[in-house]
Length: 141
Ligand SMILES: [Zn+2]
Image (tube, rainbow, N blue to C red; front, side, top):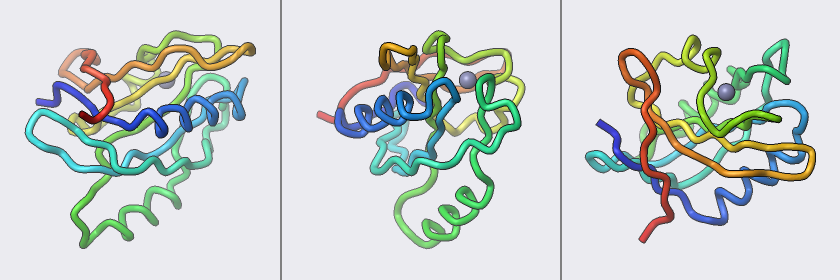
């Protein structure tokens, strides 16, 4: 069970910048990396278009980007290990919508809160049976 996610400060900063650029829409990305027992290590952030019809309330990663990345990573050492998205004018916590569309308990989620004045905190979660559970978000040591 995933207990922590490690992501470089520069990658997290890139997420914050993307969240601001997309505001007031939600921004999203696929997280490429490796899983090492209970720790997910992010190697690269792949920003993708949010193709949801209501981008201010939800996100849907462009399926073409998802397919492309799956194909690229197919024979490699890394995989898609998580999802990042932003919450414009919301909390850095999963919404009911997020829970309803989450399907893969192996994916770690990072959510960055963002307002008109800039990006706020980022927090990480994993999907449990009845709800999301917060996991540790940290920089690689
Ligand atoms: Zn959300």
